[in-house]
Length: 154
Image 1 (cartoon, rainbow, N blue to C red):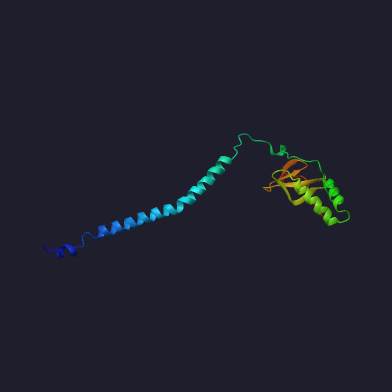
Image 2: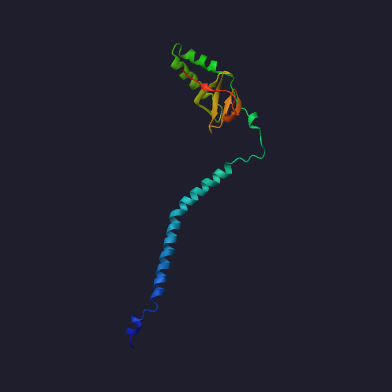
């Protein structure tokens, strides 16, 4: 039997090439799946945690009626507390007063931008989102605030 014509015939070579290429692509797909699956699982867990922790508000409230806890201390009270600790040292007085004011900030508010309202003699706390003030426990949107807050410091 003459096998030379069988081995020199190239009519099935394209099929063999496609089988090899398809197997290589399937292998690359599986390899990509193995590499990416860990990160996707971690991210989907974080998304699930974030979504399950969300609070759904079903009624609207008047933001102008919102309040924060207030300890009743005015700007003058904080300065007096600072003067009791460092009499005669104006910089230290305001340093102590600012530290005390920061410690007394309502939850979700800060005193990072130390302001006070001269009209009410109260400190002005800014919420962490930077959208609202709390002055004497009353919450107001910054854009709607009628007063003129001034820098609290020496």
